Image (cartoon, rainbow, N blue to C red):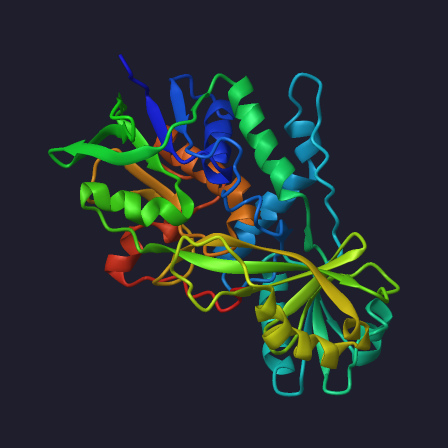
Length: 387
């Protein structure tokens, strides 16, 4: 019989974090993870930039990133499998938010709030900005705030070792596409694969990222998640920045950061709600390059070396995670809707949902404000620092 105690639909970083945490926390029942893309070619995590920051404007997001930051610092030790330790190349170069005279009061107010929630934000003068990135044009700037804990790492290696670790802890990974969920009498009962084969479990978790909203519709249960297409560009500059770059947020909303000898930037696509993975280099040349050239003459000579597109699991209501049991369907749990900050919150999200499934309550972090019920109760999480 194809029976498990827990079935997780989707095998990316959320699913693997949950499976790992269930085992780590002592869950002994059988767990199956279903993933359609065995090499994770179109998974959101490898196509992300692997960033983590504490510069949010809601306490829950800061708490989740703080927990995850500590976890990633110890990732090599925690995720060792059969003597092999992951090298995730974690660089804490910080996030630098450039401010004009109009925007600095808001940035300072946010930094004070963030520090009150456990972040390490600094308020910088224009001279201090130039000390960090000497090549910036600062004529229009009044200062900046600096998220000193923020940084980035190799997301593909993180994902691979989450899955490796879960498999080493007796989690079954089944590389087959889920076609639909199965339910009867208000209770979820399992999944049907595209092959027609059915697997059953009293607990089914939707961890399908950008696909989670569409899959939930197969049992008539609405989750406000759609794909949101995002493009990333890798730039080769003829003349290089003299110091290691933090992630620099321009007042226009565009950003850039270092990636070895290269510079990386990204932007949302004009056709956001699609599952299209092609990218368009001309978008950078027409819309982003003129702004970057104004910010630094180093962008005067460059080559767009490569570009790619990935998908956010975009929560269309308040752009924050949706975690917990679904009130309309017994046994049905969701961990989705991260809207671009899923990679950095995966350790905390997996830990939290593991506790909710095993214990019926949260212990480490209270994630109840991220529940499905908040939409019906109109208790939205209004995060203004969505990047």
